[in-house]
Image (cartoon, rainbow, N blue to C red; front, top):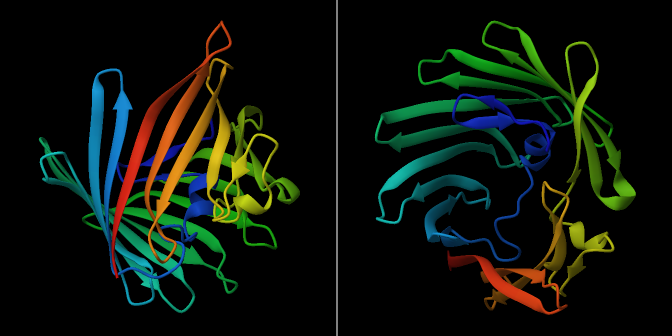
Length: 267
């Protein structure tokens, strides 16, 4: 698994989160003012239902995301401060409510003159630093190294990346303080354009959405996944269902629903 460097409860800083920060994937075509999501996850004990509401600014960038439990009670809110001309996120505030009370943290993002992400500072509600990250980017603006420091400036995490652009993949390595490699992982660079460079185990539809792939479990076993989509008149996805397919010893396939994502677009 790739390194997850946690700064408080709000943010985890790593190569993957840095790559995905400014990738816009909430909609495909017409810009909505708001999206109401209902996400259903199936498990052995039944199902879990999460509800989200996402509000966008006039430029179509995500402005506020509110997360609710099954009773409709708000449990978290993410608020974004965007540069709509450069289309980059300048800061993101995370508020959370639970039975123990509430918390609020803000991540401030720094960019160089080429708009490459070079620094992240996570602060609590009083403005105290929780942790800081520094990034080194290549000539495409993709991070090749991220270093994480605690509130006292002590380095406690390094992750490096090698890019395979012809495969749309990135190999990340977690590095210890003595320079040894603790773990490695392979992640996708761009999900938005993944259909342009599919792997042998991936298949996409005419809309550029993935319809089948192979998922590898931690124990090394593989499971075939399939996904179905429904689109509105503008080409934005209003519902997608993900299925898990297992092959029995007799060769027959067993297809079970794994997740359902529903979206209502308000234009």
